[in-house]
Length: 416
Image (cartoon, rainbow, N blue to C red; front, side):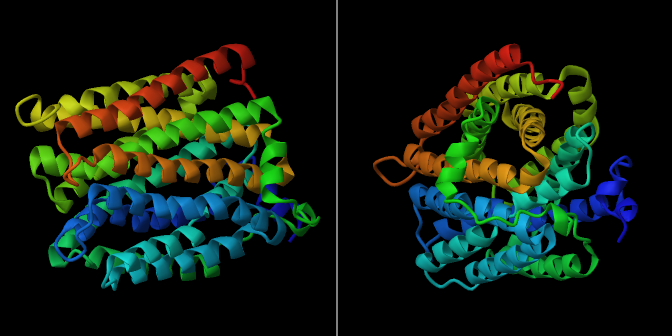
């Protein structure tokens, strides 16, 4: 393949065939992931598994703890061997994890399935690196916004599908996710071109992972962005792990109803990240979008515990969770775009892998915090445990808002 016909040679055109294919791949991957979100708490909290809110938090956390360990490893492997084989093998592993959960007969088997899926599920950084390979720095924010839109679409269809499938058995969504992810892996193998040319691959001996993290964090810009992303993801994952239990307690919503609520969040995210984010980033700069998005998220988390059938009801609930979608749609792709811009072209996979490793740690810590805060002395939740859980998430987001404002004002990275 000549240089002119390579993905990197097509960078001046934004929506190329590789971008379209990776968008579809990430979308299908996130549909499989999203299917699990509304179903998992109902799957394990019944009489068969008898899980407590703490167990539910730890189940969410175990998946992300494995991602924390393996995300930078997969990112570095993709820098060495290419994006395509890493994406393919990680999708196969995720399918095995979902299948293990669907056929579980004891709670420890559900944990094991989550761990297997988490080990091979650290492929987000590789997909982001693929986008970095096939976009210019000028179009990087637009590419990350489109990547975020794939996430949003996954949350439109995934939770809704998971909720609907739960009608036919609460284990069915997990088996469907396994089949869908397996089909995605096969399709990727046959249609996705490699984005990283052999001459651009990292061929040196890999350093100790923690040494790499320490070295990367010496860059004050990258370390600040990593901290902001860590706080954002921790707060958002507290909400994700708590929301289904909150709606069950306050409104009596089942897995299907929660699937529709997550689909609503996803629709807003698609609109914002796929269409509006690139324009806002070009006009105001990514750094200031982080400031605004963090404030909006913090406000939404602060208000949510007050909402119930006697105050606001479903209409106010839809307004507040809409704030979740807006705040995250502004902040998350802005941070990954900035991190990609401060990293060298040859270390996109490593840099984004390290950032996603921190995010995976945040997704492990957030649900664990949620599980502890939601759990009262009786092994259930009440109004006070709900309040302290979402207010903890709000406090983290307001801290993010302050740090992001200082970062935007001093570093002036809007035009990086």
